[in-house]
Every structure is written in C-alpha cells, then in structure tokens.
Image (cartoon, rainbow, N blue to C red; front, top):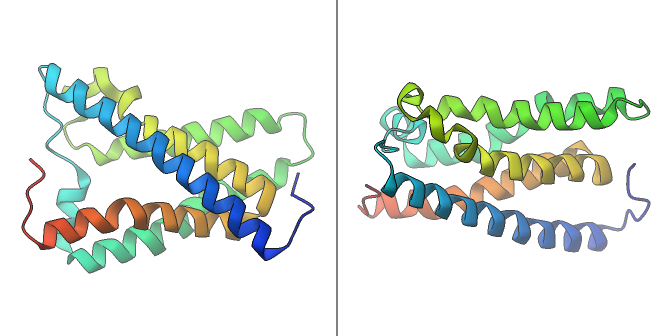
Length: 171
C-alpha cells in the first residue's frame, strides 16, 4: 500500500534513512563474503565487474550500473508487483520476485560451478537490497525504487571505480 504522506521532504528523508540501512547491511554481508572467501578452497577473484571494466571505461560501467541497470531491473523485478497489489498472493509474488532478482545476480560469477557452496551467501546482498527495493516500490512507487536503486549502486560502485582509476588493486 502506497504511503499517504506524499511530501517530497518526507520521502527524501525516509529514502535517505533506508539507504543508510541498506548499505550498512550489504557492507556487513560483503564482509562475511570476504571472510568466507579467505577460509575456503575457492576463489572469488572472477567477477562480472572485471569483465565490464575490460569492455567499458570506468565511467561507462558507472553509467550502466547507476542508470541502465536500475531502470531495467526495477521494471522487470518490481514493476509486476502492481498487477498483484490486491491479490492474496501478493506476498508470494513479492518474495518470488525478490528471490529472482537475487538469483539473476549469480551470473556475476563466471566460475559459479566452482563456488556454488557459497551461492546463497554471494546473493545475500542482492536479497537484502531486493527487500528494501520492494518495500520502496510498495510504499513510494516504482520511480522511487528506480531512484533508490541508482543511488545505492552509485554509492557502492563509485568509490570502487575511483580507486580502480587511481590504480588501487582489489585482489
């Protein structure tokens, strides 16, 4: 159910607080992934991020991740919620689309067959942000979910791409 408080200041304040929480939880999950990576017989060095950087400039990657991906992913994974908003199956649709969103991100790992025991942990940040985005979609609307997704990706990838440009290695 969309939030009746439609003032811009209320929405900006709410989304800012949600963004802080989403980033904090995702960074904690990334820390857990890093710990699991260091203790296991696997390697998480291969990632789609590296492939993108081979094909595009850092600015191109940033534009893809903070403009194109949020718009497409929100239309695909949060857009359909509207059709089920008054259905008793809405919770199933909500969590099904959230899980689908996370599972699609397994494609970020070209060596998935080697690291499959970590699959659930690897997509936990996307499950996290998927729940936040679904909540925002329901309470504020699809455009706000797209904006939130774009801001989230920009805040996560912007510093990484800047460090990449400065020659800092992530390996």
